[in-house]
Length: 403
Image (cartoon, rainbow, N blue to C red; front, side, top):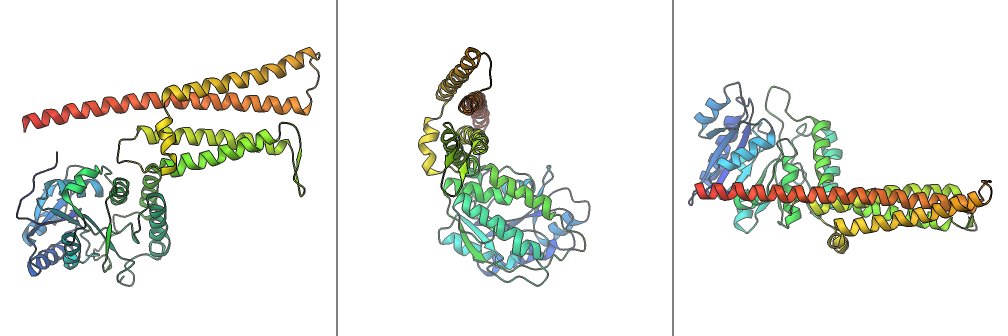
């Protein structure tokens, strides 16, 4: 259920907090002053994540409403603050004074123009010298942003910007669940998957004004962002590359059945057939896993490639089991034929043709096993997902009845 809002409250500025007594008061005051100056009916909500310093008292004195998040983590604190916020729009930003909350009106202006998700862009704004590490500015953020744009069809310039606005109903529809730093990427990914348009506004970025080490850990958090992007794009990361490898592998393997092939500038011998067998096996695994994950993930969690729509619609446990069975039988027939030939010829040395035929038969058997296992995984995952959805429906119905 989406938490209730206050009708006359347009904006909630949500700030996660973990021992930010030194800097949070300035952030709160800038947000309140900006809303007052530009006629924005709003509030500041500080989501405290277990502070042991004077943060709660300082935030309260500065005019914020403090809510205590019971779960540790940046994403958990943001989500908790959103759940307790009462405005129509949410603006999130860090409490270290790296983001200027005086720029909140830029986000609200875009929202009033019809945008439901507005990202800040540090790379299109002004960055104070020393505010962003060189590795983040020229490698980490551009690379992650490029991967995000390629995989999910977005057109943003700064996927890691922590200052952004989202309309409350849009946020709760997305179902963002990451408790850590990857929460920010999950918001963008799920918005892109369900077709929410993302608008960007340039913002200024400043040095962290705290007197301690930041919570961010570059490599650990960068990896967490990257793996989340990969998890939500099974077609791009598994199914499509798998189909390419499978097609190339089968082409190489089949072309070598009759023997060495001359291409003029080189000769393709059994070594290329071994390469083809390897590519076909890896391609089969990647393709079937991509189809299983794409089919069993709940709606709005992964982005599908349009070219594979028919494959997703066709793929089922029964069809995969049939394909597995056919390949297994064909492989057994080929290897059985070779075995009969070998026994008939007094167990002598096999000719190159029969050696290649044996290898191809084993390839078909191995592919059948992989497809069969994927069918079992598909059936088990699909049943589990159905049970989970039914359980969720029961819980939501009970909550509605109590409400």
